[in-house]
Image 1: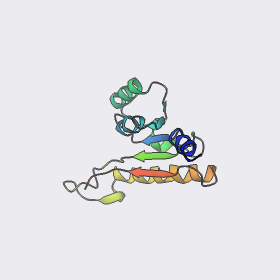
Image 2: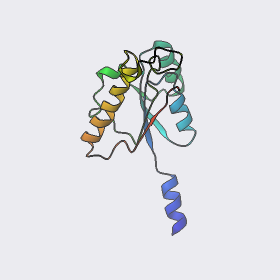
Image 3: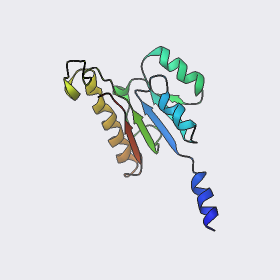
Image 4: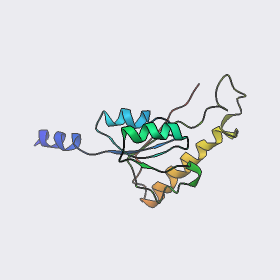
Length: 132
C-alpha cells in the first residue's frame, strides 16, 4: 500500500509557468524532473524562438504587463527572474522602484490573480531568481 502511494505521488504531473522566461532555463530544468512547462512570458524574439524549439507545445503569453493571472491556465509552480538592472550591485541600485526592476510587481500581481481565481489553490510555489 505504501509503495502505491509513493508511486502515485511520483507520477503526479506538476505544471509550471515561467515569467520573464528568457531562453527557457527554468522550463528546461523543470522538465528534466518531470514537471510540465505549460506557459511562458517573454517579449524578446530570439529567446522565444529558442524556447519554442525546445517546447513546441508550450503556450507563449508575451508581455507580462498584459497578462491576467486569473485567465491563464493555473499551474503548481510559477518561476520568474525579473529584470535586474536596478538591483545589481554594479547598477544605480534603485531597487524594485526602478523602471526595469519594478516589473517584479507584475509577477506578484499575476500570482495573486491566479490565487484569487483558483480559491487559493494555485500556484503552490513561486520561485524568484535575481542578482546580488
